[in-house]
Length: 340
Image (cartoon, rainbow, N blue to C red):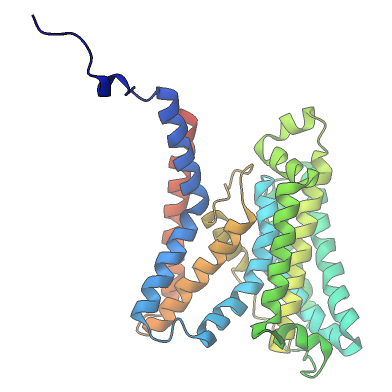
């Protein structure tokens, strides 16, 4: 009669519990959602470094860092807005308005060149937040209107774009955009400080918890006593403030208030934030992910420029296709985590 005694080695093995498998799947999905853009960035940078001799040079990487810093500052404010469940289409126009105001104000000194765009652009963001929070209007409509208003104000100041205000290249204000510290451009350092502060604010403060709560479920946040209206007003004000600061730094870098900039920047900022792992529906997002998203878009642009035979318009095609893939992947991962 065959023995029914279990082999000792087999006796020590147990089948994984369904709950353990589900938890492992949740962890994998969460890691993919949060760090997928970083993996793509590393792979793309490695391939570009092997394919193009000029990609990994100090000058090229410095140019990528500088061009990324302005969009990243705008994307930082957009991160807070999207995590709260909103959207801000005005940041591109606010960006160029901030640059024009900074260049105009630079004739009166660095303080005016900085405070004027920050005050005006923060006020635009405050009005956006006030209308969204107090009237119940859709953020899309409110910020679309302010986008047009900010662009119109910029055109009025510059006589329909005919006037270009210049910044004294020897001024302290110009050094904020053109100066270097340890071989790295000053705007890059300013952006790095802003992102460290933004990460702490979003992840480690009561305000950040309220932003996540409002974006996750506004009604539940209100029932828990969270100041929903004040939180919305704050994130839109922050978005306008950072867009104005980015515009001011860009004016210092270019030594002029260029009036043709900012078109489509709001879409680039939204794309970078979403690519970085922030859900468009709100309630989930990462400041670090938005920075990675910006760098990924800028590296894609740089690689297309390195190829040379491709028109710059291909950058928008590649960025759009990549954004679609990211949104589809986010949706799939979110469903997988809910099912698990």
